[in-house]
Image (cartoon, rainbow, N blue to C red):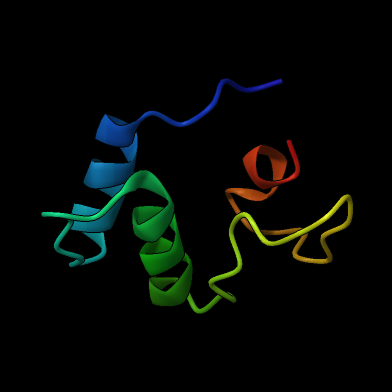
Amino acid sequence: MRKKMIVKELQKMAKDLGIKTSGLKKVEMIKAIQRAEGNFDCFGTASNYCDQMSCLFRQDCLK
């Protein structure tokens, strides 16, 4: 089981994808990363089920 992503890790991921993170909250950053990777920007909206098996944030989202 992996640990929850911290903001610094998210900021690095976002930067690598060309996303500016200034002023973004953690959830907003995650959604921006999801969009940049071509996924649905649905973090935090699932209720006990998610069909996005390849999403990097799936495990954290379902908690």
